[in-house]
Image (cartoon, rainbow, N blue to C red; front, side, top):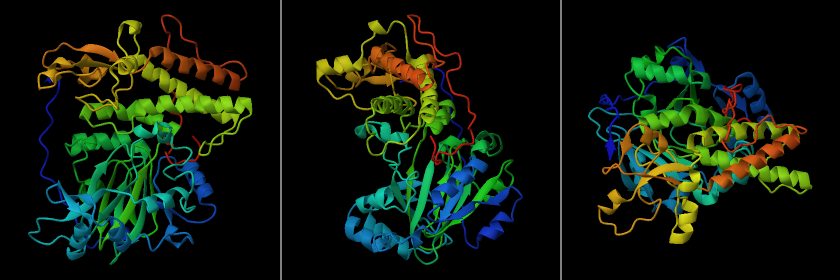
Length: 507
């Protein structure tokens, strides 16, 4: 592939190593005036209300719900390494050596044996210290998180406000994973995480130290990494030392996560986790709300493209399918029919606000991917019927972004490596942004392709505008498309709730 305008990445620094030997929460917070403890709320029947109140007063700051392991429905026997070994011990997991950042496949049983035989803290000359990451979550644990009545419904992976669940089942990203670690294993800073992390098991004093930023510090954190540390935050490769964090020009929130602690990570929060002591097991999942879709489309997707990071959550597709679901729900409400289980209960005013946001996000997406010459461009849905092939999820072969509607494709260069026939959509694909920046295939002859019928997209938009007008008493405030397709002058919704968290109950 040719890239006439790409920039060479700077050579990475020698990986830093963080040891938490001798750490305590109080001594860590005392090291710098920009270090603060994460606020905690105790589990109770009013936990969901406490979260809403905290979120309203402290938008975009992390929070911990503690004491979940004391809930009468906590599955103590299942949340143990022994139970995990009995049910999943023969499966392979990905184990990362934190010394050289290499990954290797290892039986779960061998990993746990290795973890229990390794000292809790790094020793001189040590070459290997393994951290179990992205371990598939057992079905029994999934059931507990979804229907166990311990995690507040608004925070559960399949909660009614999680718009990722609006994607077709085959396209939904699997965000629910487990992580196993011992002292002095860690994950580097992450960005654009909408996270929930529950510690389900500890032994021999195991815990995890978290370092997090708030939503409003996202830009300052990225600039600090770039200018001061000479790293790119979105590369997720740099481990920040305490002395470096102490000099950061923004607040850093620190917590020691123990058994039963549920960490709520706000949108665009950079965070770093360092395990301490004996073996710990955590379950982690990500969620998105309508508000966080705005943040993702406006801020995160451009960053992902810049560092060529694969898009997991399919933001544009999620906007489209969420819009369609809201339209269907609005029609059910109009016809007096019951909403299906799992649909959020919202009144007309709330639905109008959600719909207005989604339509503006959808317009912003279509502005980038719509052309008046669409009738002359092949559409995969039509070609797919002719070729009888499964298109599946498509991504840009350069930057990794999800291809929602428009892209450029070359089938010739793919044929050159041995394929006799390449179906439309299965060739070498480039998103419009990369193509405009000069990226192409070797032969530089690429053809425009569309994923869906533009008529279907415009029909969805028209239905949404009609529903919004109905909810607002006859006026939507949004213009219907004309032949020249006049879009909204201000397509993206205003970020009046920029500090809002992805784990708030209201969409």
